[in-house]
Image 1: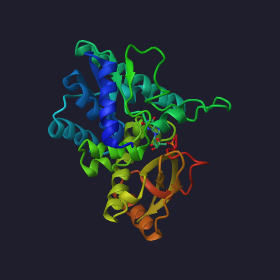
Image 2: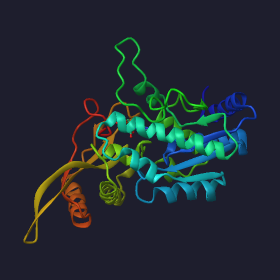
Image 3: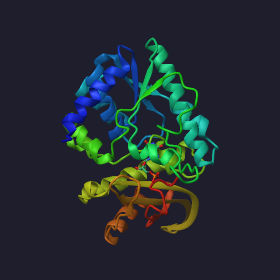
Image 4: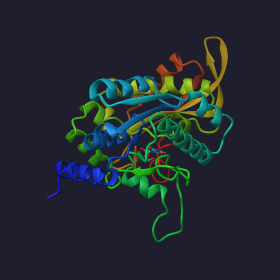
Amino acid sequence: DWTMAAFREQAIGEIRAKVGDARVICGLSGGVDSSVAAILIHEAIGDQLTCIFVDHGLLRMGEAEQVVGMFRDHYNIPLVHVQAQDLFIGALEGEMDPEVKRKTIGRLFIETFEAEAKKIGGADFLAQGTLYPDVIESVSFTGGPSVTIKSHHNVGGLPERMNMKLVEPLRELFKDEVRELGRELGLPEQFVGRHPFPGPGLAIRCPGGITREKLEILRQADAIYLDEIRKAGLYDAIWQAFAVLLPVQTVGVMGDGRTYEFVCALRAVTSVDGMTADFYAFDMEFLGNAATRIINEVKGINRVVYDVTSKPPGTIEWE
Ligand code: XMP
């Protein structure tokens, strides 16, 4: 019978057979998937692996510190921390189209990985934490017409011509299985239970054009929302929760004055594998408190709305 311990042994064997004595780089996103992939590959090939954490300026508050701390200090896995904020944000500024934004980010990730690979004397393989649902949603559905819903940066978003071959040891797993594998590999429970976070990061939670100012407003609102969710003890009951900064300003009143600021949408869903999802039914008191805190504490937001769309017909992310 099939267990995670058996999967682990089999995957390690397959990684060794595929890679031989070549060098592998692994892009870490801060999410569970790429972390589990990295730890598994490290177990298979040790210091033939170099992990690369790209700070593209599209991360959540405190995320870079958490990921770098965990890999360097807890796991002792060599990690290159690339500061690429100017590169990514510069390329995205003014871009309104969601697919172009995704593809631009995917291309810049690969260029960054290739440049870093060069610095360590070259790498033949790029490892990614691609899961089964990523594969299905990015590639055309079998039988029907060819439809791409979104170009996931770790699948369809890759440029056709890339110098490295892919290693994707989680390609056949669903999220709950990856979490189980993470536990099997000794990842702390609080890391294994983290909500998914997409490679394109906050860029796809700022519909339309992004700016540094908008990203900073979003980062603050998102941190407050998640703080409220943790305090209410709801984090583990929710598959994914995040704030979205809408490209819309509305009129409000603060003291005696008129305000004209952005609208923030809050999203929270339950799901088993991310392929379908239901909106999470918070009680109104929770939502009211979260909205009040965001409006009071974040300069630039004067209105908060809650997204009650399930998937389908909505997707989880807004772009
Ligand atoms: P959607 O928005 O397609 O998202 O319903 C389903 C799940 O996938 C995550 N997601 C991504 N993960 N790279 C990733 O690694 C991506 O490009 C990407 N796009 C969406 C999303 O956060 C949700 O958990």
